[in-house]
Image (tube, rainbow, N blue to C red; front, side):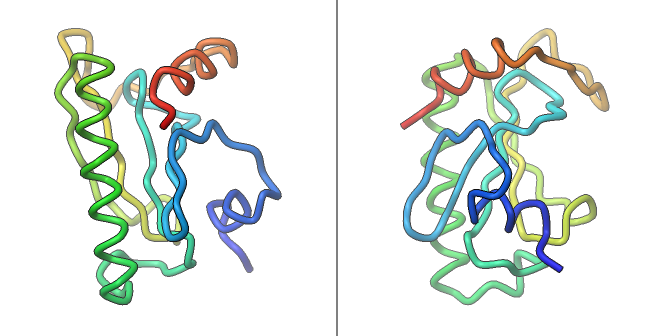
Length: 124
């Protein structure tokens, strides 16, 4: 059965896309820990980051680096990376901008209009 992320890659489920290339897709987390919390995923469906083929792994890391730097420039907040691997069985990296308002473990509920505003700021 395809993961929710595979369905997003296939266009079956909408997302707030901020970046895409031939190997990687990045979109806002719908249950963000901070404003701008972005998920960076390989388009190939693999459960664990360390099981990716080198080409896909390198593409994922390069995209995450590019997006994190862009996030810091646009949002003016430090961006932290998390690779957890427990919530969705599809390799992914969480990029989270943190500032003085960030609280560990907090989840935000943002209206669609605000999510779209953040997506537009971060979009490539």
